[in-house]
Amino acid sequence: MITFMIDEFTPCLMDCETGEIYQTEVIELRRKSFLAQFHSKNGWYVNWSKFPKSVRVFALVLKGTMDIRGLIAVSPNDEAESMYINWACTAPHNNIHKYGKQKYSGVGGHLFAIAADLSMRYGYGG
Image 1 (cartoon, rainbow, N blue to C red):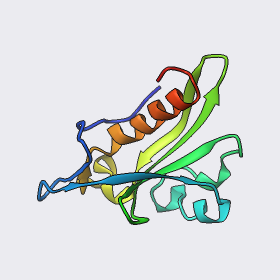
Image 2: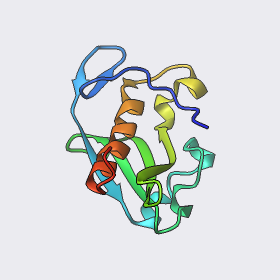
Image 3: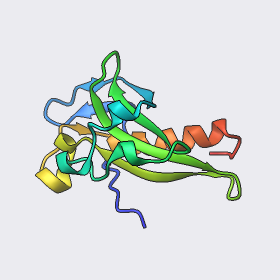
C-alpha cells in the first residue's frame, strides 16, 4: 500500500511561499552513524539506520548542501525486475500531513524519480 502524496511534478524543488526554484542533488547515505539521526522520534517515521545493508538509502538535497529534503530506501528485486521502495518520506518540516504546511513542493515526485533512475541503472527498465 502506498500512502504517499505527490503534490506536483516540478523540474526541481519549488519554494511554496516564494515560487523560487531550487536545484537538487541525490546523495547515497551509507554510514549507519549518520543515518541514526533520522528516526521516528524526530519525525522521519522509521529508524533509517535500522535498514539492512542490502537496502540503499538516498537523500534528496538542495544542490551544493547537505540540506536533506527527503529520504528514500530502495532495494533491487531481481525476480520482479524492479526496485522495491522500502520507505520514502519528506523531511519532517516539509510534511504537510503532519504539520499542515510544507516548505518545498516536488519532493515526492523526486523521490520516486530516484527509484525509477535506479531501476534503469539495474537494467530493469524504469
